[in-house]
Length: 57
Image (cartoon, rainbow, N blue to C red; front, side, top):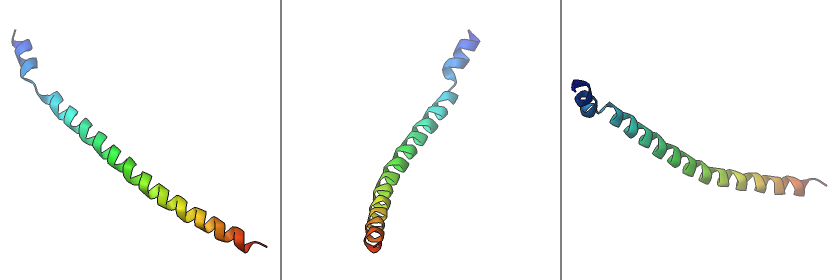
């Protein structure tokens, strides 16, 4: 019975869940940020491509 009570009182797994949630939120924030940056970079590359195509005779 002592082993069961020790397992019930153990809260070590809660830390793991908290870290997993934190990592998940950081991943979502990173993906959202990179999505916005990616759009800006694509716009810059498209503008450069247009200018280069216009400069080629």
